[in-house]
Image (cartoon, rainbow, N blue to C red; front, side, top):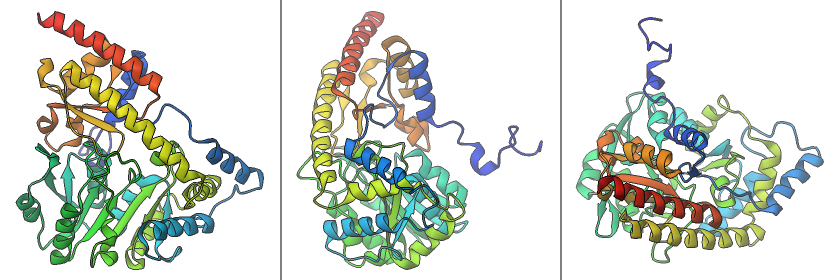
Length: 403
Protein backbone atom coordinates (compact mmCIF):
# COMPACT_ATOMS: atom_id res chain seq x y z
CA UNK A 1 0.00 0.00 0.00
CA UNK A 2 2.88 2.38 0.79
CA UNK A 3 4.06 2.23 -2.84
CA UNK A 4 0.73 3.61 -4.01
CA UNK A 5 -0.87 6.99 -3.44
CA UNK A 6 -0.77 7.57 0.37
CA UNK A 7 -4.57 7.63 0.43
CA UNK A 8 -4.65 4.15 -1.07
CA UNK A 9 -6.12 5.33 -4.38
CA UNK A 10 -5.27 3.83 -7.73
CA UNK A 11 -2.95 6.06 -9.75
CA UNK A 12 -5.53 6.49 -12.50
CA UNK A 13 -7.84 8.46 -10.17
CA UNK A 14 -5.53 9.79 -7.46
CA UNK A 15 -4.63 12.97 -9.33
CA UNK A 16 -8.20 14.19 -9.76
CA UNK A 17 -9.16 14.86 -6.14
CA UNK A 18 -12.43 16.57 -5.25
CA UNK A 19 -14.38 18.13 -8.10
CA UNK A 20 -14.14 21.92 -8.29
CA UNK A 21 -17.95 21.98 -8.45
CA UNK A 22 -18.23 20.26 -5.08
CA UNK A 23 -15.57 22.53 -3.58
CA UNK A 24 -17.21 25.78 -4.68
CA UNK A 25 -20.67 24.59 -3.65
CA UNK A 26 -19.23 23.78 -0.20
CA UNK A 27 -17.80 27.29 0.08
CA UNK A 28 -21.07 28.81 -1.10
CA UNK A 29 -22.94 26.96 1.64
CA UNK A 30 -20.35 27.83 4.28
CA UNK A 31 -20.52 31.56 3.48
CA UNK A 32 -24.24 31.64 2.61
CA UNK A 33 -23.32 32.88 -0.83
CA UNK A 34 -25.48 33.14 -3.91
CA UNK A 35 -24.39 30.11 -5.87
CA UNK A 36 -23.54 30.86 -9.50
CA UNK A 37 -20.92 28.13 -9.56
CA UNK A 38 -22.35 24.68 -10.20
CA UNK A 39 -24.53 24.38 -13.31
CA UNK A 40 -27.95 23.47 -11.97
CA UNK A 41 -31.18 25.49 -11.80
CA UNK A 42 -32.37 26.79 -8.43
CA UNK A 43 -35.97 26.08 -9.42
CA UNK A 44 -37.94 22.91 -9.93
CA UNK A 45 -38.66 21.11 -13.17
CA UNK A 46 -42.04 21.37 -14.92
CA UNK A 47 -45.19 20.03 -13.30
CA UNK A 48 -46.11 17.78 -16.23
CA UNK A 49 -42.79 15.98 -15.91
CA UNK A 50 -43.04 15.45 -12.16
CA UNK A 51 -46.62 14.23 -12.56
CA UNK A 52 -45.54 11.71 -15.20
CA UNK A 53 -42.92 10.30 -12.82
CA UNK A 54 -45.44 10.08 -9.98
CA UNK A 55 -47.95 8.37 -12.23
CA UNK A 56 -45.35 5.80 -13.24
CA UNK A 57 -44.59 5.09 -9.57
CA UNK A 58 -48.28 4.81 -8.72
CA UNK A 59 -48.97 2.24 -11.45
CA UNK A 60 -46.12 0.02 -10.27
CA UNK A 61 -43.22 0.93 -12.57
CA UNK A 62 -40.70 0.52 -9.77
CA UNK A 63 -38.54 -2.46 -10.71
CA UNK A 64 -35.52 -2.74 -12.96
CA UNK A 65 -35.99 -1.52 -16.49
CA UNK A 66 -34.26 -3.30 -19.35
CA UNK A 67 -30.51 -2.86 -19.36
CA UNK A 68 -30.70 -1.05 -22.72
CA UNK A 69 -33.51 1.24 -21.52
CA UNK A 70 -37.25 1.08 -21.01
CA UNK A 71 -38.92 0.41 -24.38
CA UNK A 72 -41.06 3.54 -24.04
CA UNK A 73 -38.04 5.79 -23.57
CA UNK A 74 -35.95 4.13 -26.27
CA UNK A 75 -38.87 4.63 -28.64
CA UNK A 76 -39.25 8.28 -27.62
CA UNK A 77 -35.53 8.98 -28.11
CA UNK A 78 -35.68 7.42 -31.58
CA UNK A 79 -38.81 9.41 -32.46
CA UNK A 80 -37.16 12.62 -31.27
CA UNK A 81 -34.08 11.88 -33.36
CA UNK A 82 -36.22 11.33 -36.45
CA UNK A 83 -38.13 14.55 -35.78
CA UNK A 84 -34.91 16.55 -35.39
CA UNK A 85 -32.83 14.98 -38.17
CA UNK A 86 -35.21 13.24 -40.58
CA UNK A 87 -33.24 9.99 -40.14
CA UNK A 88 -34.76 6.79 -38.75
CA UNK A 89 -32.90 4.74 -36.13
CA UNK A 90 -33.58 1.41 -34.44
CA UNK A 91 -34.70 2.21 -30.85
CA UNK A 92 -33.13 -0.97 -29.45
CA UNK A 93 -29.97 -1.49 -31.49
CA UNK A 94 -28.99 2.19 -31.85
CA UNK A 95 -30.07 3.70 -28.51
CA UNK A 96 -28.62 3.03 -25.06
CA UNK A 97 -30.20 4.66 -22.00
CA UNK A 98 -27.73 5.61 -19.24
CA UNK A 99 -27.73 7.17 -15.79
CA UNK A 100 -27.05 10.66 -17.03
CA UNK A 101 -24.68 11.81 -19.75
CA UNK A 102 -21.69 11.45 -17.42
CA UNK A 103 -22.30 7.71 -17.25
CA UNK A 104 -22.76 7.64 -21.02
CA UNK A 105 -19.30 9.22 -21.33
CA UNK A 106 -17.73 6.70 -18.96
CA UNK A 107 -19.40 3.76 -20.71
CA UNK A 108 -18.29 5.08 -24.10
CA UNK A 109 -14.66 5.37 -23.03
CA UNK A 110 -14.61 2.03 -21.23
CA UNK A 111 -16.48 0.23 -24.00
CA UNK A 112 -14.68 1.64 -27.04
CA UNK A 113 -11.25 2.97 -26.06
CA UNK A 114 -8.25 0.68 -25.57
CA UNK A 115 -5.27 1.56 -23.35
CA UNK A 116 -2.83 3.55 -25.46
CA UNK A 117 -5.46 4.87 -27.86
CA UNK A 118 -5.39 8.62 -28.42
CA UNK A 119 -8.44 10.82 -27.90
CA UNK A 120 -8.58 14.43 -29.14
CA UNK A 121 -10.36 16.94 -26.86
CA UNK A 122 -10.96 20.66 -26.97
CA UNK A 123 -9.65 22.61 -24.00
CA UNK A 124 -11.11 23.91 -21.70
CA UNK A 125 -13.07 20.74 -21.04
CA UNK A 126 -15.70 19.46 -18.61
CA UNK A 127 -13.60 17.85 -15.88
CA UNK A 128 -15.00 14.32 -16.23
CA UNK A 129 -13.58 14.06 -19.77
CA UNK A 130 -10.02 13.83 -18.53
CA UNK A 131 -11.01 11.38 -15.81
CA UNK A 132 -12.83 9.11 -18.28
CA UNK A 133 -9.77 9.07 -20.51
CA UNK A 134 -7.61 8.11 -17.54
CA UNK A 135 -9.96 5.29 -16.54
CA UNK A 136 -9.75 3.90 -20.07
CA UNK A 137 -5.97 4.29 -20.25
CA UNK A 138 -6.21 6.69 -23.19
CA UNK A 139 -3.70 9.36 -24.17
CA UNK A 140 -5.31 12.81 -24.53
CA UNK A 141 -4.38 15.20 -27.34
CA UNK A 142 -5.59 18.70 -26.52
CA UNK A 143 -6.66 21.47 -28.89
CA UNK A 144 -7.09 24.88 -27.27
CA UNK A 145 -10.15 27.10 -27.67
CA UNK A 146 -8.94 30.70 -27.47
CA UNK A 147 -10.72 34.06 -27.38
CA UNK A 148 -10.92 35.48 -30.90
CA UNK A 149 -12.71 38.13 -32.90
CA UNK A 150 -15.77 35.88 -33.27
CA UNK A 151 -15.74 34.40 -29.80
CA UNK A 152 -14.01 31.15 -28.85
CA UNK A 153 -11.97 29.78 -31.75
CA UNK A 154 -9.45 27.01 -32.42
CA UNK A 155 -6.53 26.82 -34.80
CA UNK A 156 -7.21 24.46 -37.72
CA UNK A 157 -3.58 23.44 -38.01
CA UNK A 158 -3.40 22.64 -34.30
CA UNK A 159 -6.45 20.40 -34.70
CA UNK A 160 -4.94 18.64 -37.70
CA UNK A 161 -1.70 18.00 -35.81
CA UNK A 162 -3.63 16.39 -32.95
CA UNK A 163 -4.76 13.52 -35.21
CA UNK A 164 -2.55 10.60 -36.15
CA UNK A 165 -2.27 6.85 -36.57
CA UNK A 166 -3.19 6.17 -32.93
CA UNK A 167 -6.24 8.46 -32.86
CA UNK A 168 -9.31 6.48 -31.85
CA UNK A 169 -11.76 9.31 -31.19
CA UNK A 170 -12.42 13.02 -30.85
CA UNK A 171 -14.73 14.32 -28.13
CA UNK A 172 -16.72 17.43 -29.08
CA UNK A 173 -19.04 19.22 -26.65
CA UNK A 174 -21.46 21.67 -28.27
CA UNK A 175 -22.98 23.84 -26.93
CA UNK A 176 -19.77 23.94 -24.96
CA UNK A 177 -19.14 23.92 -21.22
CA UNK A 178 -17.57 26.14 -19.95
CA UNK A 179 -17.27 28.64 -22.83
CA UNK A 180 -20.85 28.72 -24.17
CA UNK A 181 -19.52 28.22 -27.72
CA UNK A 182 -21.69 26.56 -30.36
CA UNK A 183 -19.52 24.88 -32.98
CA UNK A 184 -20.38 25.91 -36.54
CA UNK A 185 -21.16 23.57 -39.42
CA UNK A 186 -17.84 24.54 -41.00
CA UNK A 187 -15.93 23.65 -37.85
CA UNK A 188 -17.70 20.32 -37.47
CA UNK A 189 -17.17 19.54 -41.15
CA UNK A 190 -13.44 19.97 -40.59
CA UNK A 191 -13.63 17.59 -37.62
CA UNK A 192 -15.62 15.11 -39.71
CA UNK A 193 -13.03 15.15 -42.47
CA UNK A 194 -10.24 14.38 -40.00
CA UNK A 195 -12.27 11.52 -38.50
CA UNK A 196 -12.67 10.02 -41.96
CA UNK A 197 -9.02 10.52 -42.89
CA UNK A 198 -7.73 8.85 -39.72
CA UNK A 199 -10.58 6.34 -39.26
CA UNK A 200 -11.58 7.84 -35.92
CA UNK A 201 -14.96 8.06 -34.21
CA UNK A 202 -16.65 11.25 -33.04
CA UNK A 203 -18.07 11.35 -29.52
CA UNK A 204 -20.52 14.25 -29.41
CA UNK A 205 -21.65 15.55 -26.01
CA UNK A 206 -24.90 17.42 -26.68
CA UNK A 207 -26.43 17.87 -23.23
CA UNK A 208 -27.12 21.57 -23.94
CA UNK A 209 -28.38 20.98 -27.49
CA UNK A 210 -31.69 22.80 -26.99
CA UNK A 211 -30.34 25.73 -24.96
CA UNK A 212 -29.37 28.05 -27.82
CA UNK A 213 -29.50 31.85 -27.80
CA UNK A 214 -28.46 33.02 -31.28
CA UNK A 215 -30.35 32.36 -34.49
CA UNK A 216 -27.09 32.47 -36.48
CA UNK A 217 -25.57 29.64 -34.41
CA UNK A 218 -27.93 26.65 -34.78
CA UNK A 219 -27.09 23.29 -33.31
CA UNK A 220 -25.54 20.92 -35.88
CA UNK A 221 -25.51 17.19 -35.25
CA UNK A 222 -22.26 15.57 -36.33
CA UNK A 223 -24.06 12.35 -37.24
CA UNK A 224 -25.99 14.18 -39.98
CA UNK A 225 -22.85 15.28 -41.83
CA UNK A 226 -21.83 13.27 -44.92
CA UNK A 227 -20.29 9.86 -44.10
CA UNK A 228 -20.47 10.45 -40.32
CA UNK A 229 -23.57 8.46 -39.37
CA UNK A 230 -21.59 5.24 -38.90
CA UNK A 231 -18.75 6.80 -36.89
CA UNK A 232 -20.59 9.18 -34.53
CA UNK A 233 -21.95 8.63 -31.03
CA UNK A 234 -24.35 11.34 -29.84
CA UNK A 235 -24.66 11.65 -26.05
CA UNK A 236 -27.31 13.70 -24.28
CA UNK A 237 -29.61 13.79 -21.27
CA UNK A 238 -32.88 15.08 -19.87
CA UNK A 239 -31.56 17.17 -17.00
CA UNK A 240 -30.35 20.39 -18.62
CA UNK A 241 -33.28 21.07 -20.97
CA UNK A 242 -35.95 20.13 -18.42
CA UNK A 243 -34.44 21.46 -15.17
CA UNK A 244 -34.19 18.06 -13.47
CA UNK A 245 -30.44 17.57 -13.24
CA UNK A 246 -30.89 15.24 -10.25
CA UNK A 247 -32.85 12.68 -12.24
CA UNK A 248 -29.77 11.48 -14.14
CA UNK A 249 -31.48 10.15 -17.25
CA UNK A 250 -29.18 10.13 -20.26
CA UNK A 251 -28.70 8.28 -23.53
CA UNK A 252 -26.32 7.46 -26.32
CA UNK A 253 -27.31 7.24 -30.00
CA UNK A 254 -25.16 5.72 -32.71
CA UNK A 255 -24.52 2.81 -35.05
CA UNK A 256 -25.24 -0.62 -33.58
CA UNK A 257 -21.56 -1.61 -33.79
CA UNK A 258 -20.52 1.24 -31.48
CA UNK A 259 -23.57 1.07 -29.23
CA UNK A 260 -22.68 -2.56 -28.53
CA UNK A 261 -19.42 -1.45 -26.92
CA UNK A 262 -21.12 1.26 -24.87
CA UNK A 263 -23.76 -1.26 -23.76
CA UNK A 264 -21.17 -3.84 -22.73
CA UNK A 265 -19.60 -1.33 -20.33
CA UNK A 266 -22.93 0.13 -19.17
CA UNK A 267 -24.24 -3.24 -17.98
CA UNK A 268 -21.44 -3.41 -15.40
CA UNK A 269 -21.56 0.25 -14.36
CA UNK A 270 -25.20 0.96 -13.52
CA UNK A 271 -27.00 -1.76 -15.50
CA UNK A 272 -30.35 0.05 -15.42
CA UNK A 273 -31.55 3.64 -14.99
CA UNK A 274 -34.41 4.70 -12.69
CA UNK A 275 -37.58 3.26 -14.23
CA UNK A 276 -40.24 5.90 -13.38
CA UNK A 277 -37.91 8.72 -14.45
CA UNK A 278 -37.36 6.98 -17.78
CA UNK A 279 -41.10 6.91 -18.41
CA UNK A 280 -41.42 10.59 -17.51
CA UNK A 281 -38.51 11.42 -19.81
CA UNK A 282 -40.36 9.75 -22.67
CA UNK A 283 -43.25 12.16 -22.15
CA UNK A 284 -40.89 15.15 -22.17
CA UNK A 285 -39.25 14.14 -25.45
CA UNK A 286 -42.46 13.61 -27.42
CA UNK A 287 -42.24 15.83 -30.56
CA UNK A 288 -44.83 18.58 -30.59
CA UNK A 289 -45.81 17.88 -26.98
CA UNK A 290 -45.85 19.96 -23.83
CA UNK A 291 -42.10 19.38 -23.46
CA UNK A 292 -41.38 21.48 -26.53
CA UNK A 293 -43.43 24.33 -25.12
CA UNK A 294 -41.55 24.13 -21.83
CA UNK A 295 -38.12 24.19 -23.50
CA UNK A 296 -39.12 27.21 -25.57
CA UNK A 297 -40.08 29.18 -22.46
CA UNK A 298 -36.95 28.05 -20.63
CA UNK A 299 -34.72 29.32 -23.44
CA UNK A 300 -36.40 32.74 -23.25
CA UNK A 301 -35.89 32.81 -19.48
CA UNK A 302 -32.22 31.96 -19.88
CA UNK A 303 -31.74 34.45 -22.69
CA UNK A 304 -33.05 37.18 -20.38
CA UNK A 305 -30.87 35.97 -17.51
CA UNK A 306 -27.82 35.93 -19.75
CA UNK A 307 -28.50 39.52 -20.81
CA UNK A 308 -29.03 40.71 -17.21
CA UNK A 309 -25.99 39.04 -15.69
CA UNK A 310 -23.74 39.57 -18.70
CA UNK A 311 -24.65 43.25 -18.89
CA UNK A 312 -23.99 43.78 -15.19
CA UNK A 313 -20.61 42.01 -15.37
CA UNK A 314 -19.61 44.17 -18.32
CA UNK A 315 -20.54 47.32 -16.40
CA UNK A 316 -18.33 46.17 -13.52
CA UNK A 317 -15.29 45.80 -15.77
CA UNK A 318 -15.30 42.10 -16.56
CA UNK A 319 -14.46 41.13 -20.14
CA UNK A 320 -17.55 39.08 -20.96
CA UNK A 321 -17.13 36.60 -23.81
CA UNK A 322 -20.01 35.94 -26.26
CA UNK A 323 -22.39 33.17 -25.16
CA UNK A 324 -24.17 31.15 -27.85
CA UNK A 325 -25.56 28.28 -25.77
CA UNK A 326 -25.40 26.33 -22.47
CA UNK A 327 -25.71 27.64 -18.89
CA UNK A 328 -22.52 29.68 -18.59
CA UNK A 329 -20.72 33.00 -18.99
CA UNK A 330 -16.94 33.12 -19.20
CA UNK A 331 -15.53 36.51 -18.19
CA UNK A 332 -12.00 37.88 -18.20
CA UNK A 333 -11.26 39.18 -14.68
CA UNK A 334 -7.76 40.61 -15.17
CA UNK A 335 -8.97 44.17 -14.64
CA UNK A 336 -9.88 43.17 -11.06
CA UNK A 337 -6.26 42.87 -9.95
CA UNK A 338 -6.13 39.24 -8.80
CA UNK A 339 -3.25 36.87 -9.55
CA UNK A 340 -5.51 34.14 -10.90
CA UNK A 341 -9.05 32.77 -11.06
CA UNK A 342 -8.82 30.75 -7.84
CA UNK A 343 -7.79 33.80 -5.84
CA UNK A 344 -10.64 35.84 -7.32
CA UNK A 345 -13.26 33.15 -6.72
CA UNK A 346 -12.26 32.70 -3.10
CA UNK A 347 -12.33 36.43 -2.49
CA UNK A 348 -15.67 36.74 -4.24
CA UNK A 349 -17.36 34.03 -2.22
CA UNK A 350 -15.92 35.12 1.16
CA UNK A 351 -16.12 38.92 0.80
CA UNK A 352 -18.79 39.25 -1.88
CA UNK A 353 -21.17 36.43 -1.09
CA UNK A 354 -21.24 35.09 -4.66
CA UNK A 355 -19.84 31.72 -5.72
CA UNK A 356 -18.37 31.20 -9.20
CA UNK A 357 -16.10 28.59 -10.78
CA UNK A 358 -12.37 29.10 -11.47
CA UNK A 359 -11.99 27.71 -15.01
CA UNK A 360 -8.36 26.70 -14.48
CA UNK A 361 -9.90 23.39 -13.35
CA UNK A 362 -10.85 22.80 -16.99
CA UNK A 363 -7.28 23.08 -18.30
CA UNK A 364 -4.35 20.67 -18.29
CA UNK A 365 -2.14 23.59 -17.25
CA UNK A 366 -4.17 25.66 -14.74
CA UNK A 367 -2.31 28.83 -15.71
CA UNK A 368 -3.95 28.70 -19.13
CA UNK A 369 -7.38 29.35 -17.58
CA UNK A 370 -6.28 31.74 -14.84
CA UNK A 371 -7.57 34.89 -16.59
CA UNK A 372 -11.22 33.82 -16.59
CA UNK A 373 -14.08 33.16 -14.21
CA UNK A 374 -17.22 31.16 -15.00
CA UNK A 375 -20.70 32.23 -13.86
CA UNK A 376 -23.85 30.10 -14.23
CA UNK A 377 -26.96 32.05 -15.24
CA UNK A 378 -29.41 29.09 -15.06
CA UNK A 379 -31.09 30.67 -12.03
CA UNK A 380 -34.30 32.44 -11.07
CA UNK A 381 -34.50 36.15 -11.82
CA UNK A 382 -34.57 36.91 -8.11
CA UNK A 383 -31.38 34.92 -7.59
CA UNK A 384 -29.59 36.75 -10.38
CA UNK A 385 -30.77 40.10 -9.02
CA UNK A 386 -29.34 39.29 -5.57
CA UNK A 387 -26.11 38.10 -7.16
CA UNK A 388 -25.79 41.28 -9.23
CA UNK A 389 -26.39 43.46 -6.18
CA UNK A 390 -23.73 41.57 -4.23
CA UNK A 391 -21.29 41.68 -7.14
CA UNK A 392 -21.67 45.43 -7.41
CA UNK A 393 -21.09 45.88 -3.70
CA UNK A 394 -18.03 43.62 -3.87
CA UNK A 395 -16.70 45.53 -6.88
CA UNK A 396 -17.04 48.82 -5.00
CA UNK A 397 -15.33 47.39 -1.92
CA UNK A 398 -12.59 45.94 -4.11
CA UNK A 399 -11.96 49.32 -5.70
CA UNK A 400 -11.58 50.79 -2.20
CA UNK A 401 -9.03 48.12 -1.29
CA UNK A 402 -6.99 48.96 -4.38
CA UNK A 403 -7.25 52.74 -3.98
